[in-house]
Image (tube, rainbow, N blue to C red; front, side):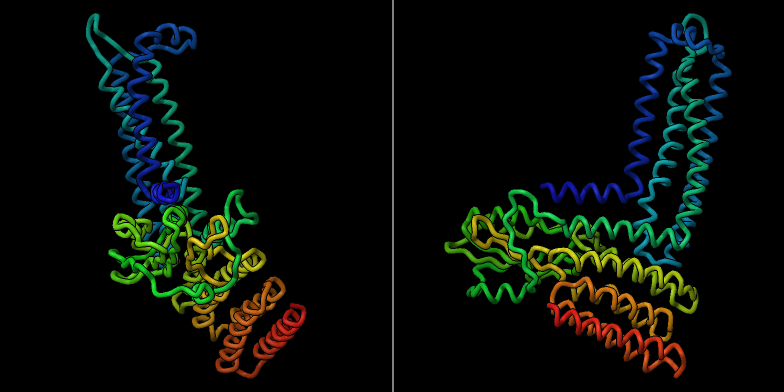
Length: 447
């Protein structure tokens, strides 16, 4: 259940409606509460503050002007936002729209503008003119003016934020920050108390082979199609332990699941109950795009897309590509220094769940392959890739990771030899290639 709540929160947080809707709802509540306070304590508060009273006609005009102004500003902000999203999609890629849509500046600004407009209209409806029933909520009018000033402040804040967010360095920084959060969340420094899991850097197939299992008793087929976003591992472990069985999930978050493919394999000393078989496939969340909740490659792919688009002839911005390489290599370096992701989960010493997780080789390939392929004729890009891979050799912990780095280094050098002319650039590339090979040999000998 916790996984589903986290995923729901991610969807609301990155949506375009939740925060503005919440603030607007708060404005509606205030439009009834403050006039009520006016009705019972308005005279005392007005006298204490010392503000001049306003006639009913003036109150109508004032509230109408505030509501009209805020609605106009909301339309302008919405138009600017749509233009910004269009520019971001064409320049940085559609994957980055999630970052722009989840901008707190946009969400808060729209919420304040809408709340101010709705509040003013609802308060204006409560102003009464005529005889003994005359009612002008003076404190509500003062609060409306306060909301107007707040709206002006948020308009300035919004314009500044949009102007800053659309700049390439800030876009890269925003995605890299989310990537760092994913690394901290998915690769914790310490195991949580009470967890019983085997740290293992072997692949899914290698672990499954060593368990010496027979043919699966059950094969749960996917009745959905899309990108796997979340696997509810906690519930699957509980199910396997309750029935003294073992479950294996051959797909991992970020992968595209085809309808009818295997998503759960199960072994049990006794027959699995029919209700368990029918419910195993419900512990997955699938969507039309990957999310970073359990998929570290999601944010890496976003940075890769920014780098690849920056290297296109239409944009031709190698500095942004170099910045992306720096961020990607820094994140991969942090991953290399941490323990591998848990694949085999145990309970009371018995294996209960095996999940598929990306290896260091998978993550390295995700971060460097497309940039190498699209930047093969760019000397700064290829040399920077060799430089960063050389630095990574000093952070990895095992031979398999060094082999993955050596593979990338060799492919980069082959591209350099093929596409670079005989000049100083190819000499620099060869120098970095030799340094990378020497570093790999040195780390292999020390391991």
